[in-house]
Length: 503
Image (cartoon, rainbow, N blue to C red):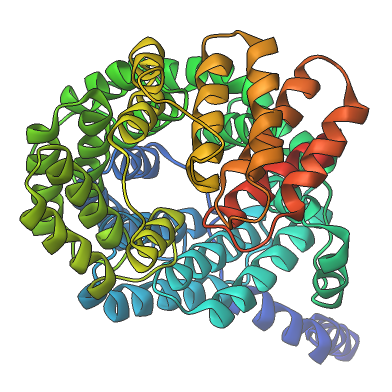
């Protein structure tokens, strides 16, 4: 009997777990559980509606998803799109602080997640980049630069952890391409900030992001197509085909409609651009997009329809709450009234160019410079320029041929005359004549401070690039960059640098 009791006590003693195992069990049963973030069908619909600029619908859908799972990194990221797009499209300073705080709150929510997932790092980087753009639009350049740096480093870190994650390749690729196109004299600053890139690597990453279906596949398609067009103007129709297909597949997507109109306008296909704007999807569920009226106003002005141009720009001014494009809108109103011989109204709008808005975007910079210099207009040159910008080459040439240029003609007027002729012949694919007049522009317009000579050099670079003559192409791209102080320096320099990087 005693042996049985001893055996029973030994069993009980053996059955007691070691304190270490007790601690392990407590930890295991009390560990927080993390749901794996995923791009589910509800989030996909919210994202799709937001990208269509149906931001109110997108916001409602994603809030419902967050109520059921507030820790899904993808849902937090997609919730940022309506606020970010609202700031980009409307640029209303009254919305800035509230929408910026909402974005910063989501950034903190993502940073607090402990989930080991590519979506967390990507979401942090993407919202950080969207914050940077939001700040840049409202003139906070230093804060924007810091956010861009943090976003870039986060994309890089995420790429090392998850090299096959395609959405990350989209945004990292774009940043690498843009950083890679910065001239060597500035790269030391980017290196200090820990930001390195190359155009080739960036384009390769962007292409990877478009190689397979993924949640941000269409975003990558648009970005890759637009970057290719910036690199090589010959790619313009390839870009247009990509954008038009997206717009055709989603006729209710206002953003794709805008990009289609934008690319057509860049290609001087004004009729097609206007068609897109006139047939754009409308309704109260779309985000108000005032800039579309300003775009239409310019297209009508190039067509010679001054009355409709005035109407569209006045609608823009009544709806737009931001500071960008105010100078440009009043400048276009000045031109329209001047062409209609309503000089009193024209002078009123020229004064408004000086008084309103900010000279940050290049359209506004050009308008302000024109107003400050108050250069006299020449009706034939002005009409030739407008027709040429709209893609109406034959009409533009008729206006130019009404001008008589002599040695006594002011140098600036001579430079513009030769430049306009070159652009028209270039558009009409008469390349030999285009080369001749571009070179005449450069030799005539030496130190005027206008953009005709630098843009002539840029266009000659494109011509020689298309003719597979990289040596001459580089000469003219570098020449384009060498000009100082003209209104379109940022744009022309960036295009030339991108082209040089590609070569």
